[in-house]
Length: 87
Picture 1 (cartoon, helix red, strand yellow):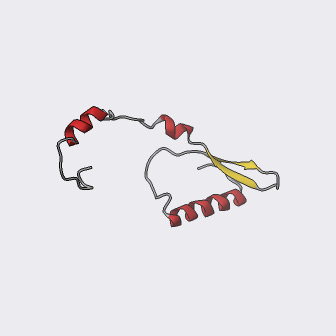
Picture 2 (cartoon, one colour; picture 1 turned 60 degrees about the vertical axis):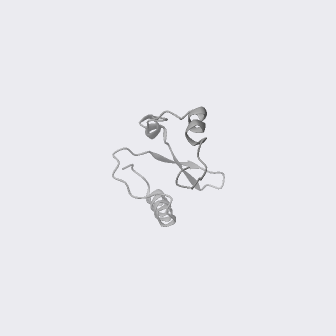
Picture 3 (cartoon, helix red, strand yellow; picture 1 turned 135 degrees about the vertical axis):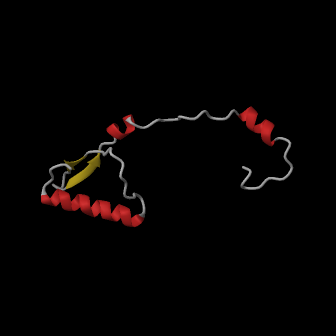
């Protein structure tokens, strides 16, 4: 989506393919994207950086109330048998 030089495009493609292969990322049809840019390093190579500010603005953080410890103790306090599924 952004105009990149052939070298930068190759680096982006390699990064995406590597992350997909490792399972760190997956294909998405989400309409929002995050821009990438390259910062020159001291050895004249370029380091790829991702700007997530735009994605973070559209994210709803902590949209659910956290349970109170006293409520959890009341619910589980009388139990005698615990299983992983109950916790």
